[in-house]
Image (cartoon, rainbow, N blue to C red):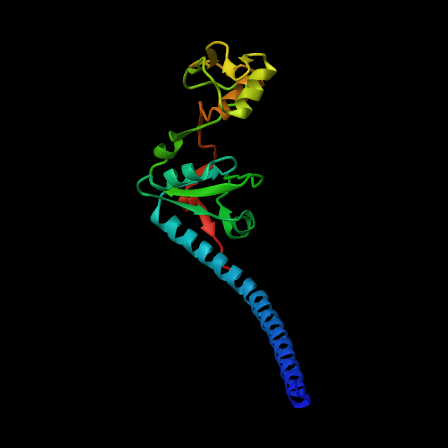
Length: 224
């Protein structure tokens, strides 16, 4: 290879490396710019979301007669969606800090802010008060139905391990039918409560925990 060709190849490689290096630097600048823009717009977006929530609350207070504040802890998302289907009602998720800052109640109406909650606006509270759903029961809670684990060869390893701890299985086979829960009776101990969870059996009925019920006329939303 001639010296001229070698020199040209060297220059070409160096030029390419320089070009790649510039591209990397430019990408870094672009990334920083994007991050900077994101951090600048985040508080504005948060403020807009808060303003929309407060405005929506005002509208719903005008449209409905009753307000229920319902505990959100341990309430499955699927059940919240079912609540949304109740006729002539609306559900609003709101942060406690926003609720505390903008909502005022008439004298005599007291509310505990300790728990997470949902706001339910409606014209008739009965549908919410009688609304029920099922959860995996804890030891001592009443079962809604009779559950029997029949004698069989088991494949669920977690279930096998639980049963082995009580010497109820021979290798992988349940020795005999096992009554796990009885309708109308408390779940007997942690062992059977764990069995029900492994069997995916929700046997305990719960109702919505209403933290506050009042007329919407007794609630005022302050201006921002």
